[in-house]
Image 1 (cartoon, rainbow, N blue to C red):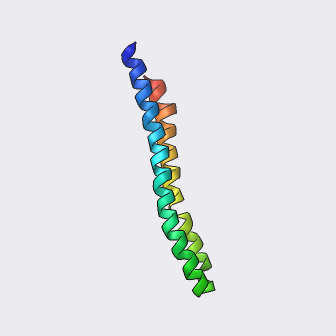
Image 2: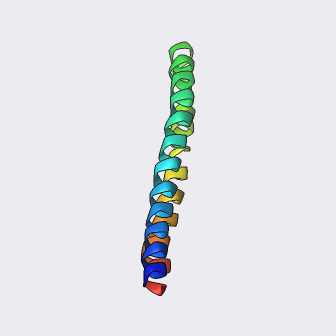
Image 3: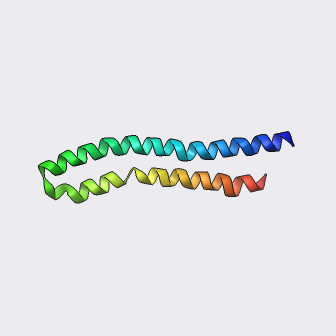
Length: 80
């Protein structure tokens, strides 16, 4: 009984870390890319599309982290 509760808690912590750490990493990456993109757009306005695309790319990392967290909660956890 105690082992099952411990496993449930550890899986919940792993899901939270998967989403939280990918969010922090994406925020750091987006900060650097965003500031560079604004500087590039200030110099050449035709770079707006490329800058927008490069700003959105780090957010896919959060989607992957969310997918891992949901798999842990809804696939792995009920299997215990």
